[in-house]
Image (cartoon, rainbow, N blue to C red):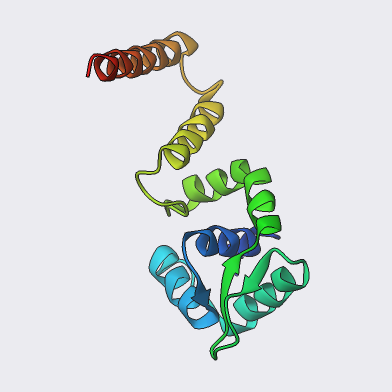
Length: 149
């Protein structure tokens, strides 16, 4: 049976999810199921050990002492996640799941950058440059319109 997540991807996905909001292991398993079903079924045997490892590395921290334990990304975890945005973008493109809030400009920009990088050598560079030029022109137009407010 082929693994759904490659080595190190599940902890990265957990970091991305915990950047959005504090969650318990159970909530994380539910979110993983929502995002990746039916191709992936999360298990306590993979999620909880990943959380323990992330906590040991101080990438996540318990929000309070309540049970069940709820976690949130630490500042160290924020940095680790930031350093692996390219990899996160690859997971998003491979799985079709959005792991950063949809509609976030940074998330969409990262997805676009990854898509453009992946397309190199597969499509006509002139056409790609034309599309990127059009996008730049539209953004510049929006900036000018906003400047006139």
